Image (tube, helix red, strand yellow):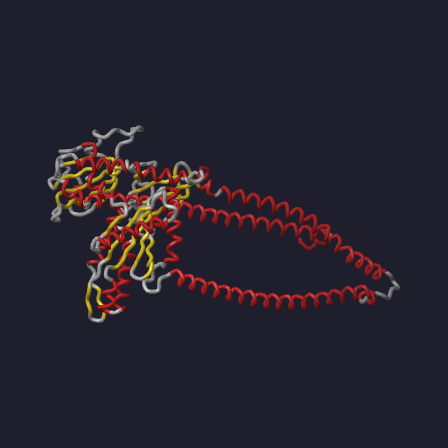
Length: 575
């Protein structure tokens, strides 16, 4: 059936139809493939973006909760407050009120004695009431504790209601309080308003583009909604949350979803919250759909133009064959003609055949030459890339050696100062406090004289390790030379820096250094200073910390001194 039809269609039209069919098939396959690829890539990119949003919110929740737990623990362990915990003078209430003013997210802060009776609280709320049966008190009397989100029980009728009428929900933070003898005398507890988490959620969403139509919900460890639409429901399965990304097929339409669990931070082990970031599927795939439509239109246009062009080319190419066919046909129809065989071997056909064979030979030779040239070029490129990689590795190793102290593995002065200058610039832009600690090993020359320089090097190494283990990832420590270290604490005020520095001092004082059968102890002196807006650069802050270190040395060593000593005195007075 095909052959009779083909016999009635000219070669030019056959070539045009075949080329058009192939072109349309290529357009169809390309469009479908590109659509699937584009939608897959768009889905992956959207899920990656949602995972980053969910992880950002989870990390913010962990960070804030860790900070709140650290604040309550530090206040509960603050020595200047020990004489005031069991007093009834109102001074403790003043301290708690001042603490609440610094962070309004604390809806209530109170101290209850061992019997569970509230002795002091912000605003005097619940003073004299019994909280002995509350989970935060029962757990906080034993150790620092954090309780998951719950509705208000005692405070519902005592606190000023929210403007929008939403009920109170709290996250409780508590820590045991001990007197000077170490005996637990009560519990310091704080109710953190759960509206704080909604502020974090809104801040993250406001940083995203509105046209993305993203949403965020927070679930508890069992999968029930704590924050967002559908409060109290469990919209997702364990398998979906475990997978980390899935499609939420709800009544409002399909949405891409990505989940990230809170992981805790430091001493805060986390409450198992799960953050889910959502985006409508059609919004996530809008760019991919537009791209697919554009590819389809371009492909159809290319196919139509290709069919027209191929038709013209086919007519041009088939004309010589038609002329040759007519010539051969004329020779075959002449009765007395004897040129048929000669026509078969005519000079024109022979020259065409010879030209084609010659062209093919030249094409083959040219392709071989091109292949060899490409192979040589590829080898040269690979060799050059290998040399560049080796050079990069060498440069990286040299940079590490240039920035690292060889004895302790800490940063050296050259690498530390640029980081400190960046921190000073951040402080001046956003007014987030930074502190500098200058640390010096006491009587270090005596260690070298009594036990040798190897023992001195071991003391320097271990002291550097103690300091490095104590700091946060955002802080920096460097060896400035000899037995002197410098520490940069970001987003830290002098009060917290004093507690941090004294913890390092105690850790060093309690360490027994051993080398070659000798056991000995060493102490350190610490001077500190906070950055001020009047400082021209970080060197001014370091200079004040160095003066404070000199004061610590002059005061008998093995102590901590702050250049701004009045801050600590004011805190003691307020207590």
